[in-house]
Image 1 (cartoon, rainbow, N blue to C red):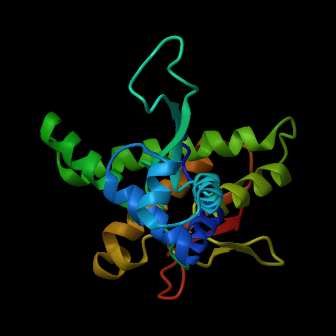
Image 2: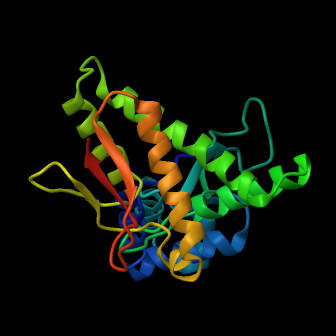
Length: 236
């Protein structure tokens, strides 16, 4: 069975897989069943040949849309019960594709954690947002530090920063002078509605990550831009 978190590339492949009509019909059937489904059961329900059914179900599993297990469908156990059959059900994680990249799940998680922290500790929501965002930033910074490997230099820190921020959907674009423009805001729609709040979170997140990294010469500065992230990184 699979519980992996799909990357954007994985998600694109998964969505593309549903473009094949027979594959989509099988996927819809498995989803509607709400439980483990065997190949014979799926073939009968969709009126497809068993070999075709097996091929498409395995493709759906390979693309992360279905989970796989092996079960005895006869309901019997012990000698004579037969070999376990391959069964399928819908994968339990979300598959999302947004272009350009968006990460409203992260923003929502930070804000939800902040509200919970504010309520449980009797503190202002603004203080709680700052607290949880800094913790998320420290996690990013530790990730950056791991990416540096043994090369504890400003250049290796620079590369690690670009790599991690790219994976987070910021689409960093490095200029000749070393300035890094973040061409995309993963929280764009929220930033349009609550600019000060979301831009402040972005700056806090990235600034804390760079502080935790503590190995480069980059500084995060607020520089609002309606067509990009409000944060830009400068060499100090």
